[in-house]
Image (cartoon, rainbow, N blue to C red):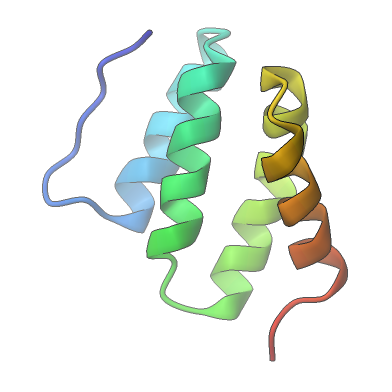
Amino acid sequence: ALNLTFWPPSTAGHYLTARVAVTNDDLDTANTAYQDAIAAAPDTASAAYLAERALPVAIGAGDMKAALRLSQTIANPKQ
C-alpha cells in the first residue's frame, strides 16, 4: 500500500492520493482516499463529481457497500 499523507487533510489531497494509487494499481488505497475526499468535499457538486470517479474504484476494490452508497449518491444527489 502506498503511504501518501497530506497535511492538513483536504479534498484535493485525498483526490490526488486516490489518483496516484489508481495509477499504481492500489485500489484499496484509492478507495479509501476517494471516500475521504468525498467526506471532505466542500459542496454537493464536488461530492457528486468524486462519487462518479470513486464508483469503479470501489467495485474494483471489492467494496460493495461503498459502491452501493456511491451509486445512490450519483442517482440522488442531495440538493
